[in-house]
Structure formats: structure tokens, C-alpha cells
Image 1 (cartoon, rainbow, N blue to C red):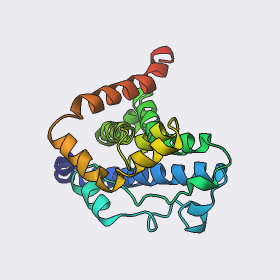
Image 2 (cartoon, rainbow, N blue to C red):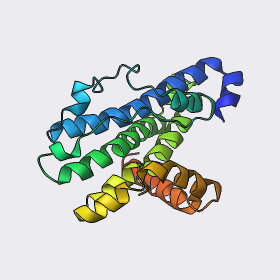
Image 3 (tube, rainbow, N blue to C red):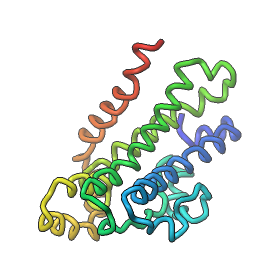
Image 4 (tube, helix red, strand yellow):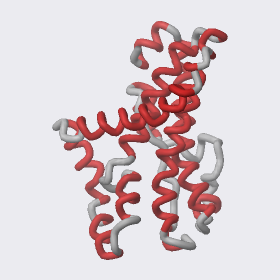
Length: 209
């Protein structure tokens, strides 16, 4: 069921889902800032971004798209990569946001698998979309096109000069991404990554049913 359809059929479930999706994109950004702080960068802390208060995180366009499309974004958390104590910080910070979305999807799947929906039937309307959209957020962000997290993952394995060249693409990255999505070039890649993530978080439930 799409978000707009859900709004007309069950407004209460719609607003609960939007609330959970809002915190899904906030958790993505807070995870980046929190892991950066662990590696020695206090930029996010100084800018007041290590908080679950939605106000510092909300991007108006990203929030509107989330409301009407079911997919959006929050303001990126500022990170000073030069403040990291070691190079692995770049990789860990890049993966943290995607890991947050995958964890949310896994918790939602746990609630579905262990019959939480029988306690509250409204969850059957919310949890599938919550799982799907968080998996989509996690998989899309792993694409190695700046400014997506996947580009930082790639940078962590590249020499400094190659990192600089990849970073030069960032001002055009959004437009490149839109073109690749519209033309369908990324569709099989995203489909494959979504299925791999879904299989990863589904695997434990095969053994613990």
C-alpha cells in the first residue's frame, strides 16, 4: 500500500508511519555523527546534531518528499574527516548511516515475524513499508556516487589523490544520480543490493522461528 493510499484508508497509520520514517532518516544522520565522535571528530556534537530532536535535522524538501513519496532525507551531519584518529574512521562513519537503516528494518521484521501484528493489527499496515523504505535507504546510500555514503566507503580504500578526484564529482553527484535513476541504469544495482540486504536481515529468522 502506497503512502497516499494509506493516508486515505487509515490516517492514523499514515501519521505513525511518517513519524517512524522521519526518525529513520534522522537515525541515519545521527549514526554518522555518533561514529565520527567515537573516532575523534566532535563537529556534529558542537553543531547540536547528536540529538533525536528533529528540528536541527529536518530538510524541508527531504521532509516533503518523505510525506508524499515515502522517500526523503535529512540535513547531512557535518563531519571533519581530518580529525579522525585513524583512516578506518572514514569507512566506519560512511557505513554507520546505512547500518542504522538496516537495523531499523531488522527490528521491524522481528516484530512481524514474532506476531507483534496480532497485538496491534495496525502494525500490519506500517511495518512492511517501514522495512521496505529503510532497506531502500540503506541500499541507495551504498551506491559509490558522491555525496552518497558509498562514495566515502570507496574513498576509504583509495589513495589520497584518487579520493580528491572522486570528491570533485560531488557538486554534480545529485544530477548524475537523478539521470542514472531516470534512465534505469541503477535499477538492477539497487534491486540487487535491496535483495542482498533483505536476505541478510532475514537469515536469522530462518533459524529462530
